[in-house]
Amino acid sequence: MKKTVLLALCASSLGLGACGLDIPDYNNPSLESLQDTPTRASIEAAATGLLLGNRAGISAQTGYVAHLGILGRESFTLDAADPRYVTEMVRGEELDPGSPAFGGSLWANPYANIRNANTLLAAMEKVTELSGEEKKALQGFAKTIQALDFLVVINTRDENGAPIDVGGGIDKLGAIESKDKVFEHIATLLDQAKADLEEGGEEFPFRLSSGYEGFDTPATFIPFNRAIKARVEVYRGNFTSALTALGESFLDTAEPLTLGVYHAYSTGSGDAPNGLNNVNIFANPTLVTEAEQKAGGGVDDRVTRKIKTVDEVKYDDNLISNVAFKMYESNSAPVPLIRNEELILLRAEANIGLGFIETAAEDINLIRTTSGGLGPITDLTAATALDELLKQKRYSLLFEGGHRWIDLRRYGKLDTLDLAGGRIHSAFPIPKSETDARQ
Image: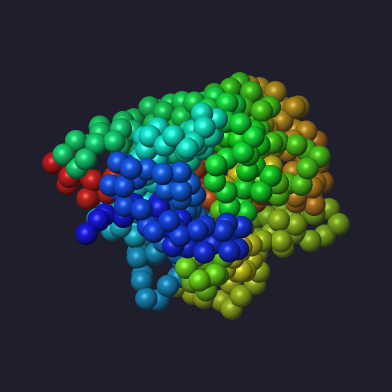
């Protein structure tokens, strides 16, 4: 039996109607045919498959948003059928590296997609029907997606590190590299991708999902690439480089804060729904009790916009919730990859890191007033600026991708999180399957 490439199979078998894609049947090209006798059609299918691979594991109950939400105490998953969401994620002494759904999760999917991108990049060189510009566009797209997948891996593993070289087989595994080296590799991929996209002509030789509306040509994809680069540079503490990238991104204070790129979902036959619309996922009540009050009365608009009251659920005296999220009330609701509101806050964070407090205050106040309905802050100082920024990021980026956990870890502030009777884990372990293979 031929081994079918995941990305090609996904692209050819899913209707993806609500994602804005009309994918013809490419007869499920096998790994062998894609490597040995690739065609324009199989390359198009493979490129589309990278979008699906990048989306895999993001919105599941055991996915990136939900798991990092638990670790950052944005959310709790209270599933009577599986107590590990509490016993391991909240109360456990450590995350279990042997569990592919918990401590060992968020590894196989991104690495599979990274390897699929490598297969695509090698295969397209054999396809004469693709022009030089189209190949450059594909390179820029694929490398950007690889950077996003590596970012999922290192955001979850942090100081545990991760492999960069994933081109070999099971008998030739790449070394586990340090966090700094992985981030450097991500930044390099993004810069290489930008250079490729600049030579990528006017159109991609495949159709992107509806989540990329407005960013679906090589030229308009570059600002998205630069937005991700800005996030990476802030994570690395390279604040001047972050400001440069933000200047090339789609950051625009005159545009809606929702402007951005999203993972698209649908309830159509064969496509993946957004699993965050889940009765087992609850918001942390501290999001409400710790929110700032508006001067005229009422709580921060981001709380009322994103959180709803539900019937109280009690796990024990330390873990009780009567609130849930309402950003994903439809199974076809998109999940942000990155949007304008984050970029404005990243600019504020970079300026704080460089000591430009007054400049940072302008962006912080824009978010406070526009997104939160709060009054501007007038006494921001070098001593208070970071905490104010982190508060705004907490509510602006709530339950969108683990931002709270990642941000507090970067600044050594995980001990400020609500323990909920448990402990805070600082990183996922390297999966047992990976360490076993290396022995």
